[in-house]
Amino acid sequence: MRGKSVVDDAREVARARELIELDARLQVLEAETALSRERLLRLYKELRGRSPPKGMLPFSTDWFVTWMPNIHASLFMAIHRHLARTARLDRVDLLTRAYRLYREHCATNELEPALSLTRAWRLVRFVEAGMLRYANCRRCSGAFVVRDTDLTRHYVCGCCQPPARAGKTKAAEDALVPA
Image (cartoon, rainbow, N blue to C red; front, top):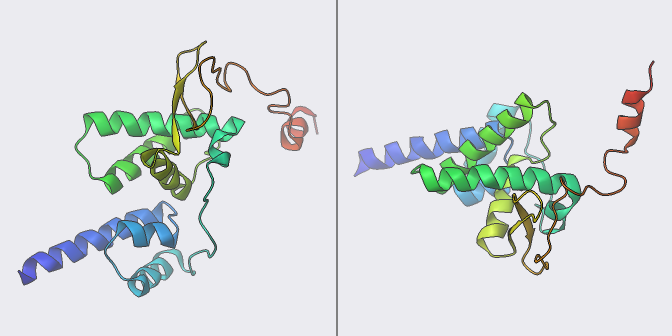
């Protein structure tokens, strides 16, 4: 019995290390591991060299349905759903693998990832709670994250119909102007 708890403890520490390396917030660590808050704080400080960031986690679904975050949230959830159907993983391994694949996809396509691991974790929780769901775009047939209460009969995604000011940020404008 004692040997099993040592193995379980080592597994929890390894899981916490992986989450911390992916920049998970302390609240995610507490929810997804069986380690004490004090131990998680020590481990975080040991790995990051600083205390974990303070503050509340995102608590609204609004961010996930705005234009660019929605594209990233939908991409992440497509990866997450595929892994959930095809791989036998527990919820934390599923989250971390899907997040690593999401980041790899962003890097391959020279995109800045919009989702942090904490936002991805929250997104999965919102979908599991039924606060967010999927709607298929009537033009491209892609599955996109929408609010539970959104009307989706004639849904068109942000890729097929970007907002008028999409991509018109100061940084994008500065990138076009030669130095």
